[in-house]
Length: 306
Length: 281
Image (cartoon, rainbow over all chains, first blue to last red; front, side):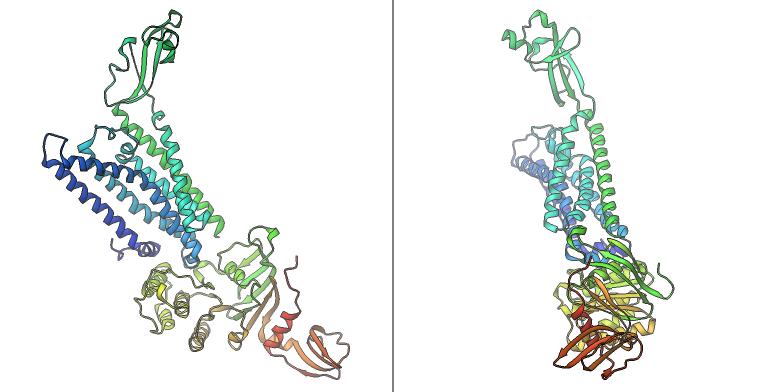
């Protein structure tokens, strides 16, 4: 983190936020050291998951997954508050914008610096999470499609922090009050992530399996690690009926009235091989939204400052 | 871009904060400040001085009209509250000036303002108001601008520092032909240093011109009450049968009055007392 080779507004940004930079570097390093130590402790007892090391690792991974979900909100709040709104609130922007640097370069250098720190830090944290995940993956609450694990293990998180960065740059300028801008950016980022998250399993066509009626909820041919979506009854014409369509009439799950023409059941699922395509599509959505937010942020900047 | 020989020019300049119905901070301002002048921008509190300077610095967009100032690289601006990054040291703040003004930063000029008065490792947040002013002025002078816009620059300084910095500023401006606009509501701060005057009152320019011309165009007279036509009366007061008036004279003054050239203070007070309050539409 040498400031010697940095020039112009980049030097100023790094100098201004050097404590935060050290904090980020320290945080990433600390999480890496902790995770290596936890894995080492867990590895001391081979062949069982019933040891203290494994139990502590699971708890730590729970916390880590929550922290990773919150990471984009923290990034957005920091960009909106201390990096943008505070300059406008305290008037230091008057200093920056009357030097020989254009407003776009001023904001651009701030955001590029932030991005150049946040993206590698996020990738490092994903690496750390995956390091711990190696020991608990596939177990309850750490399946690949569990919302926090899904976000913490792939590029989606990078897309999310970049979207938070863009929203922070926009909201920080619009609100111009440090604390309010931080809170609002956290809220808007959270909502945006929630909305996109809702679409996650529709981003790729599900696979559909079919089978006879009398197998209950044990879907033959669906890998156990799959994300399971809707299921129901299948008619001779290929139509889908709700799972309880027969039970409603016959009070039996596997006895169907003849007029329904039920020939079996269907189930929809994403096999674990869909992990990467869905991750990449969702990341693309976040990146597109981030680009929109950044475009708006620079439009606002240009409208305000000639 | 500005015209040749004109450092700062406004035409029908108006600025309102948050909607035209909320009142105008400035309206219908027009002036042309010749390059190389040291201009006092005076007016009571709330007259629009800071708004005018921020418009000139390019920090605000005019609501209407135009203001023509040199581009960002060629002007320096010190805001009234002397904003600086509180967690940077004095040395880092000056380094910032160098980083953000590549190719034009003049370390010698900046250090002349600092005058070894401050420990470079002190954080800006630990500085007094006067010390902050010194750092802000060092940043402005280090930039080697054609136009210096200083909003109430001397307000926080003790008399000694004020005298020293004012002298330095004037010498620097004279040496480099810099145009300087200094705002203040305390005239004595600027008298003697400035050769141009802009009087702003209620969002409008009330006086604009070289100090010598303005003084020569006005006359202070005392004597019996009588018709003062064809002269323009700026302000007149009568005590018994005695008349005291400040006039802008049209031709020679003929009458039974004692006449004298007004001081700058007489002139300003007369204009401030008689111009209507509030902002005319």
